[in-house]
Amino acid sequence: MSTISLLNSIIGPVMRGPSSSHSAAPYFIGKTVRQLSLCDGDKIVNVEIAFDPEGSFAQVYTNQGSDEGFAAGLMGEEVTSLKYRQALSDLMNGKPFTLEINIRNLDTKDHPNRVEIAITVEDSEGALREDHFKGLSIGGGMFKLDSFNSFAIDVTGSDFILLLECGDNSPLQQLPSNAKVQARVCAGSKNSHQLIEIKSSSPLSPQQPELKDMIEQSWKVRSCIPVQFSVHDEAPLFASPKALVQQTSRGHSLADLALSLEAKRLGLTEPQTRKAFADRYDVMMDAVQAGLALTNQSSTMKFLKPSAKQVGAANPVEIIGSPFLQDALSASLAVMDANANRGVVVAAPTAGSSGIVPGTLYSLKQQGVDRERIIDALQVTALVGAVFAEYGSFAAETGGCSVETGASAAMVSAGLVHLFGGTAQQAFNAASLCLMNTLGLVCDPVGGEVEIPCHARNIAGIAHAQSSAVASLSGFDAVLPFDEMVISTQKVGKQMHSDLRCTARGGCAATPTACAMCG
Image (cartoon, rainbow, N blue to C red):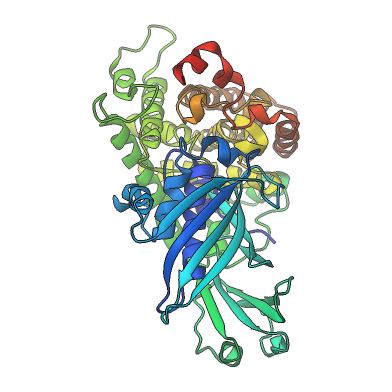
């Protein structure tokens, strides 16, 4: 079953920078844990968050805002609220509860973005209890909670969830699973208790006939709602890129397919889905403007100064310069500046690569391309990103920068090919070219900050996407199919040393100048 959504997972989520894996996912994890821990009259007393010393979180959780994301989520703040930025400070001062962050050996070490959370809750009668969660960030802001009080759960933020704590003899058969409501007994046991997980793409009510009896037989009912759009259809989006290309031969463009597939996935009408794509485009353009407004005085970046406005205002270099490239570079830097300043951006597909797609689209806008055509290109961009996600992860912790800026350039190069009249095959061909040229690209943020070389790699991604699109439209054949290049990208990423996968221990981060800058 697949929960990949174009709006949730590819050109999303809408988040605060600087990192989708280390800022957005912690926020969503914290927000979900808060919901599952609190019942009527409960209040949080203390939260302990633990990272493994060999994992990625332990290396960068302060520089990349993991602590801030967890805090805001645990406080229940909205991502666009200014209170998001204040939450960590409040918790460190014990208001309204205390927060501890510890680095220690974790029981489970299957992923570099593992986290364990112990949350102490006081109920309405003053009694204390402690709940334990295990989870992981899996790239691009996506996450999974897979353990609750030693029971195996499956919570990804894409469903409405009920967790029913009950006795071993609770009659699960009273709740037959169907397309709308699914139930299962979670593996694990605790003092003759069992845990039943119920999930649905629609809101769950205790008054629903099929739920009422089971809820009445449970001594505690926990719930959470989706952190983004709920996923209504978990069928695979497509069999392969080749299958998508074949569908375009029957009169459907890639943009049409993206719209219809996402509408089905989210249980929305196509006009509703189109509006959601348009809204996401608007958030991207707002991020460009926010970045362009930054000054040396207002920016909080550690190593870089805001340069987007300067790049945009410079005269294009004669012969090699062009207004389209220059506008795209300027807008890309603007978004990366906003991201590094922990502003609101769109992960596309990640925060570390969040400048490439909006930078390209902004430049199209500046050159007078119609808004509706740009949104069509965005839909194709997202669809090609979904193909990538079906075969692998966007987490630099497992794949290096090739799965971030490499994937982003591939996505938007396909969008450009579509916008300028290319075929579906040419779109995937351009995307494949991008992946060939970023195969093995490491993730090596200096000081753990999403600045150096992240800004530079977004600059490269802009030019890379444009040159690949032009080459494909001009007839150059990549030969190697896109899906095979995605699989190869993932394999090569896993072969890289952990120092080269977002731990700030290798590559650019290990140069003498970088080490001197970091003290």
